[in-house]
Structures are given as structure tokens and as C-alpha cells.
Length: 215
Image (cartoon, rainbow, N blue to C red; front, side, top):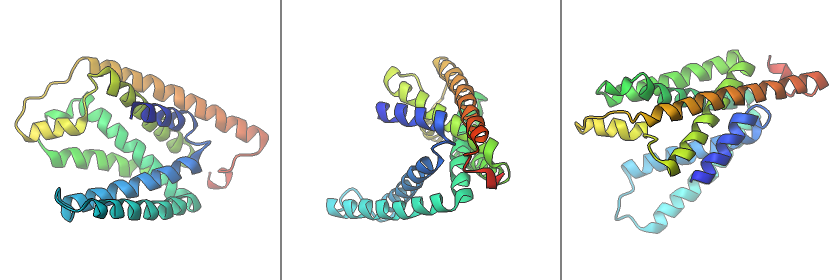
């Protein structure tokens, strides 16, 4: 998982716009698979369900994800909405721990805050395609990259775990090392955005920018 997070994070942060179609296709597949498995395992599937049923659900979710991924690639602004929303959700996770909003003892607040930021960024991506796409993919990739480091180095607190602990009445405190991780996310975010803006300028200079019609 560490290697996957590092590679995907680096790719998305540094080339989110340049490899937009590849990334939005992967995001579409992962989004559908995650949602289908979440819905099925919280409703129909139980721990004593036959293993073949789980494999059928997984296979079906992957096939559906491939179709949705292709749809995102075909409808550029829909894909941009999804990718930007992902970046906005990552921003929500970062701010939830940094502000710190985790002291608000409400799981509903956590989801409303993160999903709200995701929707705002998604809508902005439709209106301000280039800038929002670059900034959100740079952030999403940076967060994923640093989270991959945290899987091995430790002390990178999972916001979902924090929410669960708060709901169980556990007193939660943020490890000071987390702020070093946050600084790393911010540095990589800026670096990724700079690299992507340079890619954009190079494509404009040679007249090969595939997104000129969306500006």
C-alpha cells in the first residue's frame, strides 16, 4: 500500500492535468468499486456470506467502474468535477485535523464538512476548469503521497479513526508529528501545482493544449 500510495500520489500531484484522462478513468473505477463494496457490505453481505458472492460483487463493481470511468473520460467536465471533488475531500481531511475540527463531537459534521468541500471544489472545476483542476489534483496527490510515507513511518493519524474514537467517547489528541506531515503535504502541493502550471504553459506555447476549448 505504501508503494501504491507513493506512486499514485506522485503521478497525480505532478501530472494531474497532463494525464487527466488516465487519472479520471482510474478515479472512476476506484470510486464505483468503493461505493458498491461499501453499500453491499453494510447492507446485504455479512461475515458468514459465501466467499464466491463477494467475488461476484467485486467483479460486477469493477465492470461497472470501467463503464463509469469511460463516461468520465468522454464527458470532460464531469470527470473534472469528480477529480476536483476528490481534491476538495482531501482538503477537508487535512483541515479536520489541523484546525482542529476533530474536537467537534459529531460524525455528521465530519462527513458534511468533507463532502461540502468536495462539492464546492467540484462545482468550481466546472467554472474554473484549469486552475481548480491543477490545484485539487496537486493537493490530492500530495496528501496520498504523504499518507503513503505515514503508513511506514507512523504517527500519521487517520481522520476516519479519529471520528470513530470520538464517537466511542475516547479523548483524542493530535500527535505533534502530524504537523510535520501537514507541512510536507503543503510543500508537495505547491511543488505539484508549479510543475503542472509549467506543463500547461508548455502545451499552450506549442499549441497542443487539449483543454483550450474548455477555457
